[in-house]
Amino acid sequence: MSATAAVVCGLGGYLPPTVVTNDQLTTELDTSDEWIRSRTGVVTRHVVEPGVATSHLATEAGRRALISADLPAADAVVLATSTPDRSCPATAPEVASNLGMAGRPAFDVAAVCTGFVYALAVGTGMIAAGLAGTVLVVGADVFSTILDPRDRTTRVIFGDGAGAMVLRAGDPDEPGALAGFDLGSDGSRAELIQVPGGGSRQRSALAGAAALTSAADLLQAGDPYFRMAGKAVFSEAVQRMAESARTVAAGVGWSLSDVDMLVAHQANKRILAAVGLQLGLRDQQIATHLDRVGNTVAASVPLALADTALAGRLAVRDRVVLAGFGGGLTWGAAAMSWPAIQPVCSHPPQIPAAATAAAPTGGNPHV
Amino acid sequence: MSDLTERLVDLLTRQVGVDEAGLRAEATFDELELDSLVLIEFALILKKEFGVVVEDGELTPNLTVQGTAKLLEAKGVMV
Image (cartoon, rainbow over all chains, first blue to last red; front, side, top):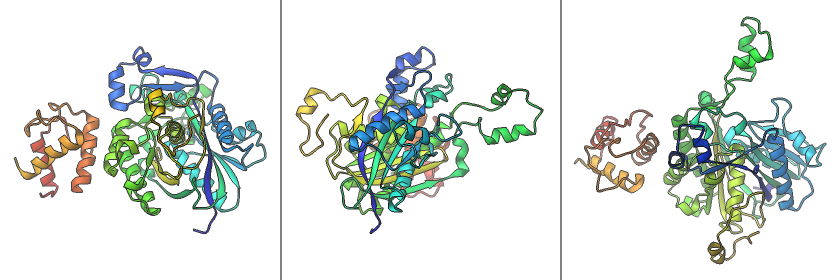
């Protein structure tokens, strides 16, 4: 391919400091630590303090990605989120301004848990088209703000967080180059993952109803909470992520046994295991981060990638497949080789002393 | 035990992780303590192994391994 490639040159992650354990949730929900661990694999998740929103997390992750890239700024900001600060305007312009990048193009990409892979594809396209020499791609969500506190099927799974990558123009053969993408959607199953109320569909439907006397009436008329049809989503997520990962690997000439690491959206440990089984991957080839941070939606893939790298599990030029699946429905995968970068995260993994002593040679140095 | 039932037992022990000792072909999924997520995972394994589509809800908790073999045979799976 003679087109300019997008090369990953920085990676950052940010988690809000407040941690919620399974035991804390059991005081409010009819569930148990054992049930949550066995059904989802989540042990702890991070949640924002009142007043903190997506733009704040996105700014912190973006800042760290730029430090990782040793760059003061990027030419554009693409922010994947489905919990924007406001439904209008997009959150990306404010994030760009926060990072001293006012004036550059900045916009949001909405694809729920596939958001980051979609945003990477957009950033890659901007570089290939010569619209930007560098792009800051961020995935950030604060699902704690849209969960029904009484719904144990969703409240135990999701966590807040943000991850970001810096892409720069480069050669397809460089370590860090994004070599291929596979993206898809199926809008016929849009109702499986949704926040039903708060949008134009609700407002338009109510426009013909009896006169509403206040904004409070309007809000009450639509379900403001995130709803997910768990079993149907489980099955779709496994099949779509496995197929997309398989397609993208084949597209860049990798067999599945060539893949050093699959960094899939951290929806549920059972989904990760089932995807691994479908693709014939060993446990060591599958990144796992959700035990500590839950499902962080658009932040999930970059946070899991950063965590895996900081744990010393990636060597330069390692073949990495990123995969996502989310509301829309949407899905996507990307193939990249791991570059010689040091991720910068607010919560790096705690590496036990014994493990660092046995760290693989040729891997990235630990922070 | 039919050949297909034997293949299913093999899949359940090797890929789903069911204890071989307690696995009888007449045991229900409920008796084998397979929760609803495991049944979805098993349906995906059956799709990969036999190329057959098992819809959500077809593998019920009171279905047995033998019953699953019959279900697959009815869908045209032959061993």
